[in-house]
Amino acid sequence: MRHPHDVDLPLVVDRGAGTSLVVQIADGVRRAIESGALRGGDVLPSTRTLAERVGVSRGTVVAAFDQLHGEGWLVADQGATRVDPGLADHPVPGRATRPTPTTSPGSGHRAAAPVADLRPGQPDVSGIVDPTWRAAWREAAAGAGAQ
Image (cartoon, one colour):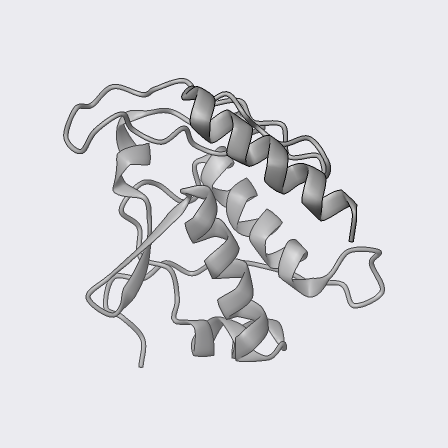
């Protein structure tokens, strides 16, 4: 069933492209938001409807929407998936990165995204400040390498 206020999202996927269908759909939605074709609060088509239009499985569209939700581009509410309404106050044309999370609900200010080194084997020990915790962490890390 089509939501009465959802937008017509012109997405095209290329099965011969070097990227997955999920990535192509997510990139297409991001481009639509960045270009202003989609704005904060716009309702996206249902996953079933979009999957049928594009010619992919519903799971493919769900995976793309989940990725965009995790990145902060989309929100789900009352049975509809929408472009994050917080993007309405913050212009996105030309933005090459995902939206920055807010510092607190309703604050209206954007915080700088924390920088994290996500490379394997590079643990973040900055939060371990107590000497007892540091010793336990070192002991556990040394034990893991011996296995």
